[in-house]
Length: 404
Image (tube, rainbow, N blue to C red; front, side, top):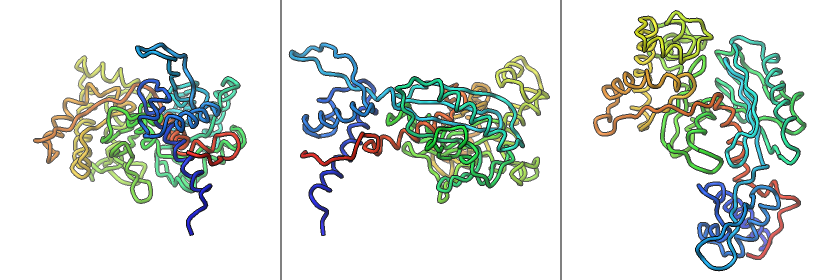
């Protein structure tokens, strides 16, 4: 038996609410209600009513009217809501981050601390992260609404159960980080877990919630103490059957190579991870990547050797991934982004030789943005994507069917 007409109209309205919000968020510039109607195929009255509902919920803001070339009353520009935000967290072996991002993709507030949390106690480290989150949230204006939270972690994550199965560089396994953060966060703000590289890749695939970035098909490498990876196709991370795809840092480039905390030998991150590169160059682990690059540019043999070794290992691992997945671009993040100018020439030469299709489409190497802890931003973006899919959940009162 078909659903009642009221139920069908309610479903249509919720779908159209999401469509209007995604249209406003996905536009490069402010749009009017009339623009929304044209882009969605709705009537102007329908688009206007839905936009009014989104404005009343703070999901869409009205900007000042500007007179245009046409006669009549100027249209009111619509923008993504500046008061609707999400909290993005990241716990990594070298950084802890708490960041609040709004629907316009702007960072509203953040706290970052660099350090060494290799082999650290999970409760202590996550307690530190929870303190950063509490400070960030306490400093927000009263009218800012935090609608959810996400947590980026380096390793294998069971997203559905909220369990970190294993993070080799942190030395953590089989724990529920959200439980350890609960005492620091407001009631009901339980962060959803995700792999750090998967979430960081979102910052390349999307420039803001609902707005595509410059690249839609690419391989992302997240450089921290180790190396994470994510393959992205048409703007979506290729998660794999259990959500564990993309562990490029643990691709073996030399079976006889050094032991890795993951239990294997000769993994890529043993050559191109930040600590591994600095150790090969004879530098302390706290040395900034820029200093390593400067020493190599000055002709220091150990520094040049470390970068050459890293580029060689990257070439072997990436060529195998690109031959399998047919992706046109490699985006280097974290410390690899800071070293991209030094790594890219040798790496591109290797890929030109090793990637079967390079004769027709040579793989490109690009550096990600310089913002640290991209996984925290990606965790916030993922939460805000849920808002774009179901904005009716944030509207006051129940969703009521209206005549369309």
